Image 1 (cartoon, one colour):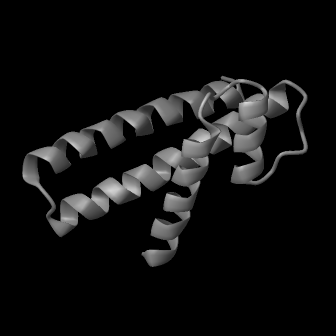
Image 2 (cartoon, rainbow, N blue to C red; image 1 turned 30 degrees about the horizontal axis):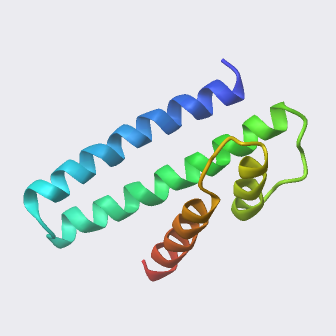
Length: 101
């Protein structure tokens, strides 16, 4: 299996786990354990999103994007995502949660 297919598969699996955490959070409210798990799954999912996009860009010949911000900006330029602002806000959120824990 190619590197991109592996990344896409891992991303889809993690996205499903994030959706599960969202349902659990809505069902149980804001217990620390559920909240922490939800935050961690968001972090994992976001990491896989930008890293998967990076591999896709590399496969198309775009090799000079190495940071999450650069990948998001290039993904927007290539019309892979339509809302650069929200992706950058999520990056900021991910950075904040990563450094808080």
